[in-house]
Length: 141
Image 1 (cartoon, helix red, strand yellow):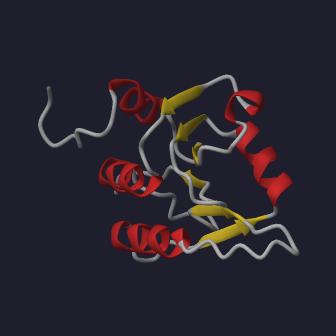
Image 2: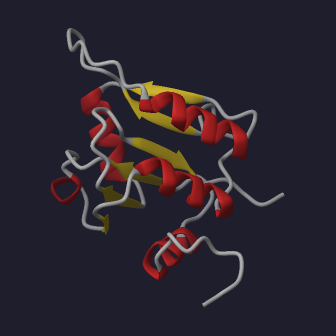
């Protein structure tokens, strides 16, 4: 056990975040995301929702203030009537951690391509549709 590390974060996830460098990205994926098909470095967080995990990660990991966007959401597919209300929660959590953060929306297949280049994918039990988010790691100032 260590002090000040959120208990929700597994040793594997903490190690992964420590290994990441400035500009590396991590995907927090919902339960429908094809994480294993897209990436070889997948961490499972079945049964855990993204908001709690996102809050815990943001306690330790700075976001990239040098990038145009510090986070990205998977945009709703045109014609899909889904309104991803979970995005409001993500925006609040990210703004609380990094008040100047800018969050982009990526078209579905562009999001998948970006996920392929990410450092790791964390597949969660999040059931909200379009619940995926990519975080870009920054530097400690």
